[in-house]
Length: 380
Image 1 (cartoon, helix red, strand yellow):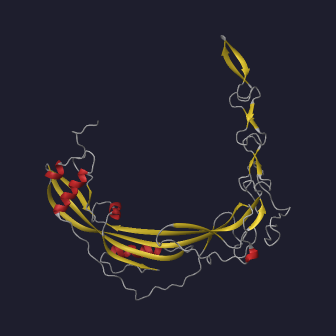
Image 2 (cartoon, rainbow, N blue to C red):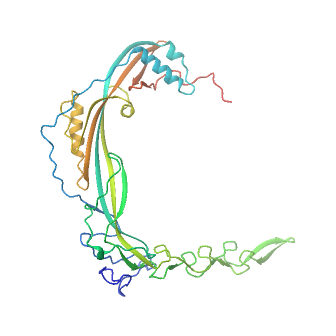
Image 3 (cartoon, one colour):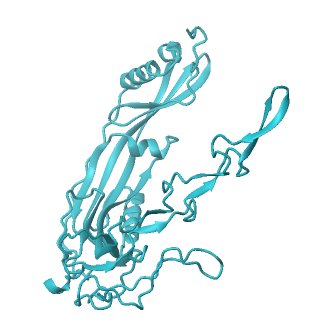
């Protein structure tokens, strides 16, 4: 079949079709395959590399009367919780001593609330490319079965919202059969190791066929025992045949070409942390907190009435950045988590000590704890 006319006899190749598979360019470098693809209406620009397909326009208007949920407050921890959390943290560390945690004097607790704003935008991206598999007599769903549907007209459901996922589909009615371009329908290629000669130079004697040995007090030349004096050995890659199976058609000589549709669902996440103490932001983002706000819509509105202005500004900024012209937006969700943070100011042996207790699980961040090495321990 002439690749330009998939409706003709399947499997016939035009004599003028370019054939590749070992051709060299002017620089002596192996040329890339030049393949004449079938013409499929709606897929004229599809090639071997991925081609992104912008989604059809979606007319979605955010209701102006969309209400913002009420905000909640975050809890505050006590002094007993702060000390007990430090003792538990010290007990989980290797070679940390408990003396400082037990004897220190807690002078002041400063409680505050850190805010973690998270925006999630669940998108779908579709792309197409020509693909092939060896033709072994399997069914060929070609143009004779009808016109190929558009890439966004093929229904492919995702498994779970806000979860990354990738699926592949063969575009219906785009398949056709053509002789293999890699081997010119021979089913085999010249072995690249021996270059079709079936033998390679013996590595034991470097192709000389003889080796020097020390025998009876003098040096003698003997025939190489590995190549029996020939200087050559059978090529292990092709087994001495000089040919290997074609990697494209797997020896079948023909290929079934089709357009492959790739569907990628991505959960795009943007986040912002408001933390006024010295506690690292990454610790706040991973700690448990109370839910102050949550909203899930096809398109969410920016947070505007949260009492912390920086959160409102972050919401506007992140929503402005979550514009994906090459993707379809299925759903958006944003939340505000409120993480309690207590900065503990202590005194131990007339030295000031500061540590943090944060999160609903009362995690501890104490990088300056004085007894981080127990000198009495021993390694067995």
